[in-house]
Length: 210
Image (tube, rainbow, N blue to C red; front, side):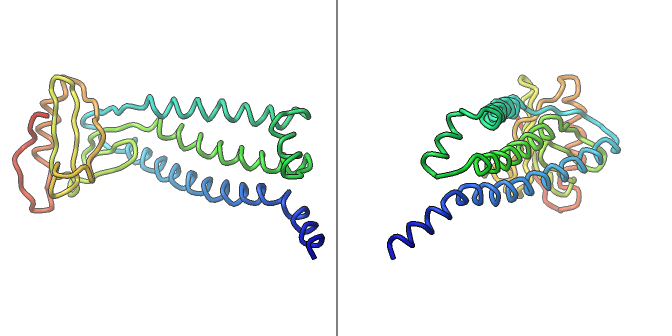
C-alpha cells in the first residue's frame, strides 16, 4: 500500500508546480490584459477629448518595478536555455521534474511576467489631464459628478482630488498628487470651482491650500 502511494506521489509530483504555475499565470495574465485594455480605451477617449489642463503623476516606481521584472525575465530565459542551470537542476533533484516539466513551468512563468510588464508599460505611458467632460488620471476617470473637492499646493504645483462626499476626511476616493504647470493653476482652480459637484447637489467651499 505504502509502495503504491509512493509511486503515485512520484508520478504526480513533477506536475504539481507546473499545474499551479499554469493556473496562476492564466488567471493573473487575464486580469492584467483586461485592465490594460480598459486603460488603453480610456487613453483613446482622452486623446479624442478637449484637453483643458495637462496633469502629471509620479511614475518612477512603475519603471522600477518594470526593470526589476525585466531582470527576472532575463534570468528565467537563461535558466531555460542552459542545460546546467541551477534552478532547473534543483527542480529535477527535489521535485523529480524532467527537463520539459521545468521548461513548461518557466514558459508559463514568463507569460505571467510579460503580462505584468505589459500592464506596467501601459500605466507608465498613460497620461493625465482635465478635459471638458471630467478628469483623467493614470488609473481612473472622474466625470464632474464624482469630483467633490480638491486641494492645491501652489508652491509644489500639486493638486489632489476627492471623489467622496466626505471629501478629505478619508483617503478613499482620493487621487495621488498630480503635478500641474504653475501657469495653469489659476485656470485649473477656475475649472474645478465651476464644475465640481456639478450634478450632485453637494456643496462645499472651493479648494484650499494643503
